[in-house]
Image (cartoon, rainbow, N blue to C red):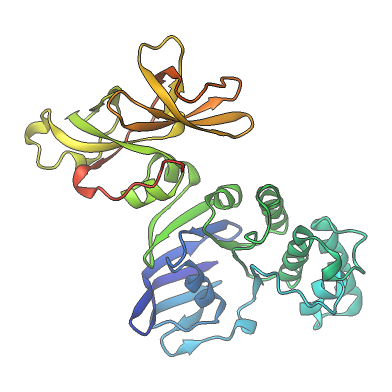
Length: 362
């Protein structure tokens, strides 16, 4: 449904998008995930036709819509847009907002489509309400219904939940996914929030400095990050220094881990001998609380999460790790608790690739 081939976009000397390529399958929900300034919204604006591109090509439903010297206007691209600020017409009712893009079809068909979508987004009975009479979540549903009404080839969502509180954001992202799927739409979501990306998207592209550095499932982004940036950006965790023993084992202060050791950690080590330097990422779910374990760590920070508590633990070396523990294990600051490792995926990187770490909670 959507293809980008080597797309570049610059604003003066700033290169916002740097040779980006991707393809989105019909009926899928994809996400561009990354921090502010990584270029993800610029990509969306180029797809929508709000920005021209300096190099490459963009195709929607196999038709060329953007290339150097070619710019099909947004209204001719058969796209729907859901904006961060909803962009509803304040003087129009819910029904009139949803019907806004349907003026070209017969009245009876238009009314049927509006009724169908208002019901689909859970706003039945509110057709005559105006935007200021609705909650933020309800306004977002109206914006989604309006975007879906003309049956666009492609639905683009630009940080659609950022104005909502956390609980509503997570619930609504799941509901919006169901609505999009039920309508058979193809969608691209842009967000900096990995929880939204994980809840909504079939596949996710992590962006950094105008490029997609990994295009993958949420599972692989978390458990099999391709580089230090993805490992650091997705999820939480702490890097510990390690020695590579061979192509299947690394040793950290908590023990020996077995798994596939990335080739980059083995370079420069004759015959994969002991002493190769690496760093291993431990996620909170890799560190298990175990009262029977002889390995003890001191509780230095705790964050109550309802069903679980995220503990920051200090090892004997002074280094810290994170552990996600069921909340009925309520340990005091300064207490030493038993821990053991349960690591299914060894995530290791060469020490030469070290970057500043930002994993520990403040």
